[in-house]
Length: 305
Image 1: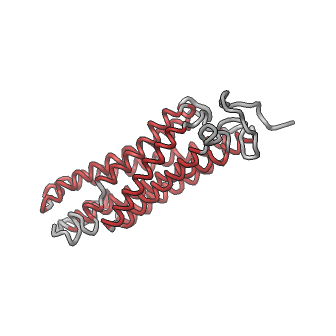
Image 2 (image 1 turned 45 degrees about the vertical axis):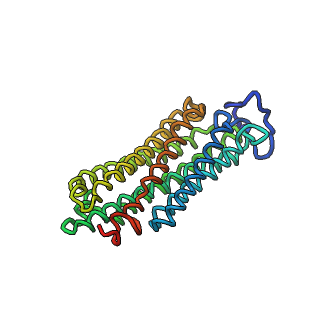
Image 3 (image 1 turned 30 degrees about the vertical axis):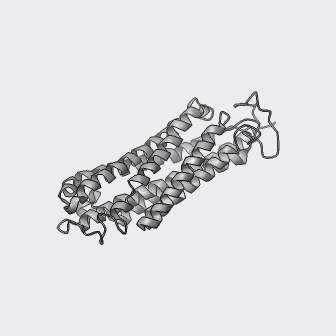
């Protein structure tokens, strides 16, 4: 007896299935990805790639800037493959490989973005404690955690969550292609997202503890650096909340199952996946922490502040 299910999923009535070796019997996205969103994303992320490459050169804040360069590069590659899933003659929405590759890069990109956010928090702790010698870094750091501990915990959590998500998405693609139930694969994806939402929530709590600890220190920092740092801290908080919004959306979307309402309408993807990430990266491009703690930053060792 065959394990294959009856055809269940979205098929675009205006786009015939090529039925090639790499094609699924349905469009795994749940809709036909639009050309316009993919092109807009490629253009904006390519521009942000140039911005962060320039910031890397001018600020020499290597860890943060390299992570943002990787973030934007992954987004560009992801949306190029999403472009390949748009309607013919440009793309083929039934292609499994296009779905898997775009998912891999679009999901991996925020991991680098999150890591950049983590490094920014530790850089701010070091900068404030360095310009207020009577206050140690551990006093400013949330719960007295060291820089290495903060980075180690949250980067490890993101890597684990992302590996689980990519595995789940790949299994969904295989299941749909073979007309088998994607429930187990979707549950794997859901577990990865739930873990990521929980881990980032813990980071947000630590970030707000840092802000509480550092509030008075920022105002007392000499040379106006404290006031400037408040703006950069607000940009960091806004970017963090946007990343968290995106992750919560992914969790809610996946909890509805394959073919759920959120996952079958591209408007949700555009508003709650694409938009939060592009705005977060843009904020960190303008209020780049390297302008504050980089080689010639206001709070750098050679800035005079």
